[in-house]
Amino acid sequence: MESKNVIITGASGWLGMELIAFLQGQFGDSVLKNIYPISHSASEINFGFGRVKSYKFDEMKDIENAILYHFAFITKDKVANFNDENYINANLEIRNKVESLIEKNDIKSMFYASSGAVYQRGTHDLVSNKSDIYAYCKLLDEEFFKNFCVKKDIKLLTARIFSLIGKFINKNGVFALQNDRAS
Image 1 (cartoon, helix red, strand yellow):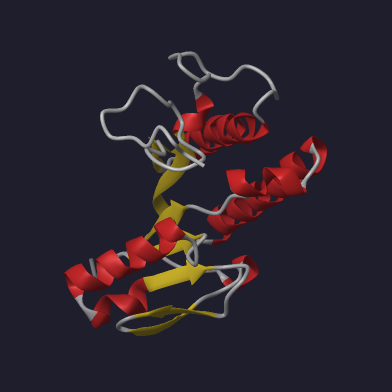
Image 2 (cartoon, rainbow, N blue to C red):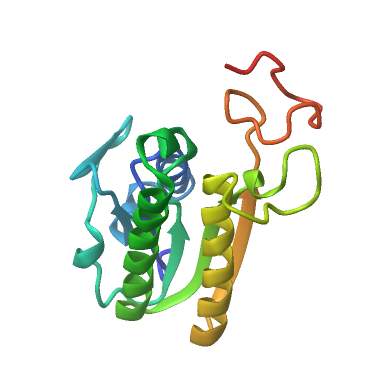
């Protein structure tokens, strides 16, 4: 792990914080010098083991031999705060920052966290229009990063993450573990 650098977008969110805590738990405090968390909302992130400095997108340049974990996205709970055009543009702005980040650094591989919401509710079919703007934007990013990483010869793993509980459950009635009273 010490020879790799880890860049994490959305580092102050749930997935980003869990990844940092996991890496520190597996490799100890020494791994923290190889982790570059990016957060738009925090200059440092607090953990039980201490505080970790976070960066802005434009501060990341010349990081060599890096793995990029891309979690930054305007989440589904924020959709109501935007009209469709502004929501799409806000997520395109994040995508453009990630593209620039990749251009300025030596990214060897990338993990992109997509969403199970890309499937039409109750089916295996992908969302085909803007009826679910969150899912639509996730699909646009999936396609963009697939093509961009091929062009840049970057290994890409895209994971569609499903919400099994809560008000954003992706496929109510499909999972063995779920909360039918999601609020």
